[in-house]
Length: 164
Image 1 (spheres, rainbow, N blue to C red):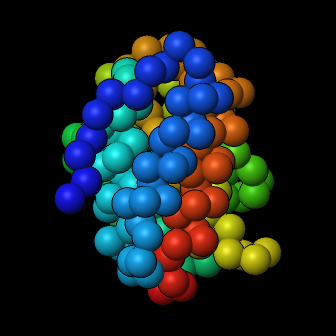
Image 2: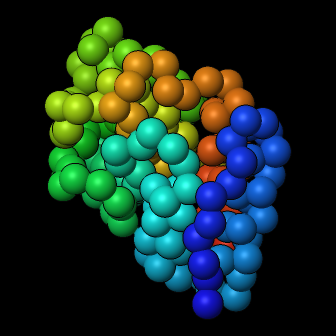
């Protein structure tokens, strides 16, 4: 049985190496993409400090993301590609690290408490299948170390999970 415990966070690269190991162990032997997304979101939400939302949106139609497994308050169910931080990450095919969501044009406020956001596209080959989205209630919560760490987490999730 998996037991969550605090990870020392003073050294972010070491923190993310430890978190990646835990995720690999947690997902080992499981190929279901939804089950793996649920456990990934739960692991992130319980181990990363200062988050108010962690979860997935999946591309279900060419121009629309649909809410997947998450931890946090209820969220927007559908997001058009190109809208908000998540939709922009898909359209631009890149990670979005937003220090202040109020300064981001077209931010979609699912939770008015969110102040910063990190969104990582999920690639299967050249295709994007969705995004991994983290929100925080404080500005500038995420930095380049977080970006690299969460990009590695997204890659572990994708490697472990069978296509839909």
